[in-house]
Length: 210
Image 1 (cartoon, rainbow, N blue to C red):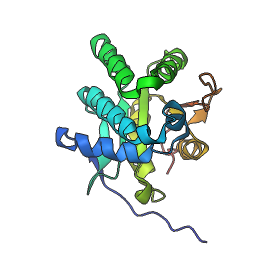
Image 2: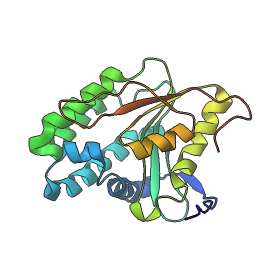
Image 3: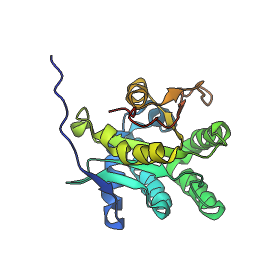
Image 4: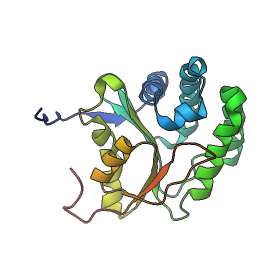
């Protein structure tokens, strides 16, 4: 089958009124993600727990005003933490941990282990941090993921700033590599699937990925 070039898409910053639909889209995108399936192995519990998780994350990151979503109906989102800023204040971070424990219930140790490993592996050099990028399954394969990343990656290139993320699947890795991210050594928690830290140096003028 010949691939069809994806159409151009409009993306915008999310507003507070988008919070519920953004978290719903991300929950759908990550429903079968290998790391989330390991973190929440009970299939009956996973769906509501993943949705609750993204409700919390979207709320926690709203202060940064760096959540990007699709223009006509919310079918995906990119949650960024701006250059040089922590994802959350110490106070909000403590509340996040409490909420995570409640959401994950008997699997809280798995979730906390992942958070601790991500913190340990996180680069100390300032960067734009893409915490989550997801597109609902029905809209995948149309270039939305690339478009959702574009505004912040363009800013990073203009301002000479690196970017960082953790990929959770081979498909995600391939997407990020097309946009200049390069994989570092993977890490995991106990028998979890690997998380792949990926770093992107700012592109020189005229060489940014399409």
